[in-house]
Length: 435
Image (cartoon, rainbow, N blue to C red; front, side, top):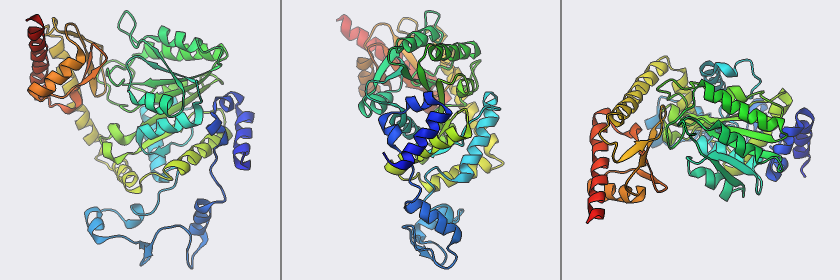
């Protein structure tokens, strides 16, 4: 094993042996090279005042070489903020700005020991980093039965972990904390579990309320007290889009410093929060019990980044930083939130009208981009295909009964027509089946 990796492991073992035990084989082996090209280039950037012939970029007239046809479209920004490589952990100013925003929006985190957010190539990359660091063959990854399908690729296919499902909703149509607890305690013989908490949930658009949040934290703490090391990942992709009386904070705040056997990891980003899906700017943030532990986890994370994408795109990090620092940012974001809330509220009002009760129920939703219909009489895939072929309407079929509808991409004035076409398609299929 490389001496740098060994040193990081020794730090984690000393600071929190449970967190060291959570690492995968890759997580134990990975490190960020301190004597490689990047570190030598960073030293030269600070000291080489005559000539800097280190890192592989081209310089012209004292600034990064670039094409005019590209710079003309980006003339607001200095070439140094666009064309140079961003550091592996991300643009320092952006990391600081995101941390400030995170603490302002999540009072539960304040006073907790957390690391500096590390920039990822959006949410999927952050989850992939966590999978690389913590998921080994046959490790249990606990997610609800209604989940984002990419978890399977990220944890099970790439890393050989084992997906363990529990029902998202209980009999009262609230978050099934008892199911989560049962799934966790079932891992006692293994002694380790990875939990992914995605709120607002994709595909249902559900976020727990304050009481449910406490129940989730209690379930994870129970598992820790039973001797299970728990990697608790909060996938906060749709953070901030809370339209009703749900939690308006990430569960990361409650899970940070919950128990020595619980490692809280927050994965979030500008992707959906700031409506910049194509920018691919996300963050991964660790909670810990010491600065040394957080530093070791950051070094290992940087090692994964260096070994995969080297560093994230610099221009999009600059654009997001510019937005966060703009005096118009909060007002413009509120305007978009109001539009999204209007679409969600119109969807719920229409579904509660009783017009469609013979065709479907719907799963509780209060946040995010989506909601899910629970079909009563037709198969979801048949309905999806019929909607697309006859009416040119796209939806997502999930299993036999569930149809995901993204109200996020439908104007409020078009919501009624959309669900009217879905209802008409159900009737079309029922009519054919009756013949």
